[in-house]
Length: 263
Image (cartoon, rainbow, N blue to C red):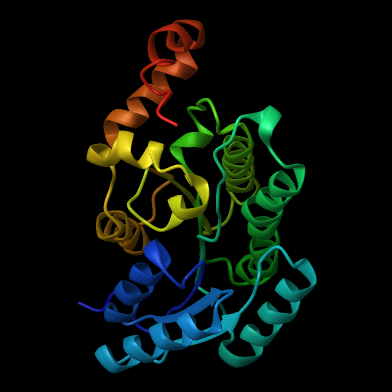
């Protein structure tokens, strides 16, 4: 089955991890993945491999999504080359796990620039044409950290709270159209994310047995490309904790605070 035949899918943060695997999956389903990341060497290698292994002809563009001027320039170039963008997956992002009093404000600013403003900017570039054509799908990769905050993640959690708020509001803005807006909220995933986020290695060691695999998460997101849904929460038990927190925050702080203090 090639259910995504002929669809153009932009994937930010496509040079590794979920983005890379998602691009491969989309290509095998007949889509043309459009890869965006900062590393040209990695993008070139991935695009060549996808083209060799599938019938797809992927494109790639070097872009730091925090550079809003460059976002506009690159997306303009994409539209010139491929026309309508059917699906945007806002996957680019990073985190740094530190206590607030130890946080460098330049790192905090950078997290918001990439995780929030970059995501919003990319979305703003594709939305007008989706509204005009009355179709499209926007998938924002948020995090369980956007629902259930923990110690040493105040900055990162704040960015993911912002992503979820933006996603939910945007969904309401396009509610009378055929455009789908989805949020993906994974827990910890076994990727190179933690090379920056968890330099001590303590968090990875403490949650290793709970970590999701890249393939599993990418495969679940691939299913959303085929059958859009409002929200994807992984794993289910962690989302149950998020629901408990929203209903009984004081109790959750007391009961779950120590359990979740793994950083």
